[in-house]
Length: 272
Length: 213
Image 1 (cartoon, each protein chain N blue to C red):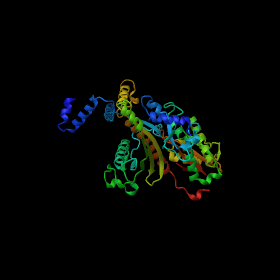
Image 2: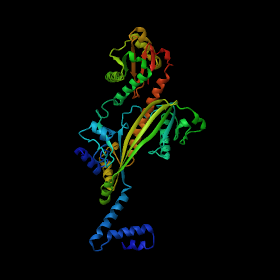
Image 3: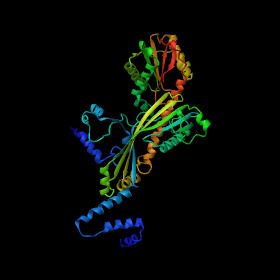
Image 4: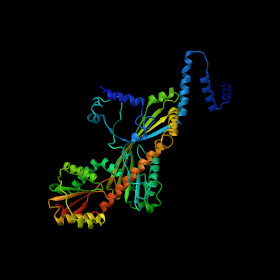
């Protein structure tokens, strides 16, 4: 303690802070009121450390875990021209919309489609999200237009868990929940609605050394690979569900579009 | 007054937030076996009066997010994925087909509608047919249980044609053979691709075929 305290006199701020914390923790001054600053500070320190120890879990609520038949790794959309429009809004900033669009482009290009991405309405000559090869290509009409919109985001923090985390030195986790709704619409080039769906899911983030260590041990020794929670498991699960559902929806829309294109012109006089 | 189960669930959600998500006590498989839909408190009190009380007329102190979660009837993998996907949305798909008939051919209200389903599994085809008939009845159509017939030779010829010609050809044959009378119309519900999870539909009336969706 004394070495650190001496070092802090030099004026190095991180060292000053560290020496202060060590001094508080190791203080042996007499008096009953001296215990709580140590506890509060140690809790804060524990929680700050615990911020890096996060276990994120993903829970599909509606639509995301419906069965999918089409395999997203196959060439399901050969020679199809697809416009992907990621609608920025309250739940999706323009930068995030652009990233989402680029991922969608990779998803559908891997399945044989020719994809252009937009973060403004392509029907109004919207801006390209960065993947279109040129203006001539942008002007080409699409076979299908996929619209993605994060419609509502409910974020809930739980202050009681924050307090419990604080006073338990992050053994008890602090918890944060995010519920999201993904609205998906598929139209043809004329704007005719072919398919739509709404997916809901929840991400629960638990911060704390206790929860991270417990889950890490379980992942390492008892859980099957598909049941693991630490690392990027939640992101991978969410991506797999979302990509599967989107592929299935676009596939169904493509078949519906083909059927409607087979439609002979209806003679109104033929109707009774 | 707050119902006891509501109070208990409120306390549990405060002490153990995110308990329904995968974690130490809950596996991913168990969370995937449940479908949760959001409801407002008034709607929830109507559907689950034993669990939820009516909202107070002067409002509540807290904003609550309510969800009704129900177990899937069959566990994952027990039925084929396509059957499961079709059955999951069968009610809404059938209602959508009925709406398409209503929008596409409102003049058919005066006729008797026959329903035919082209699906690889007989039991599934029966369920889809029943749901479609039910939705057509709810939409105000007259529905018949009769099925139009084709000769074996017609079936052999039509099964070798591409879909765009096969359904139109079958429709013409129904009319020319008289198995579809002037007062009848046929609603055909079908799946054109084994990877498809929604239902397509067309209508045959007066020997002319029309895709509805």
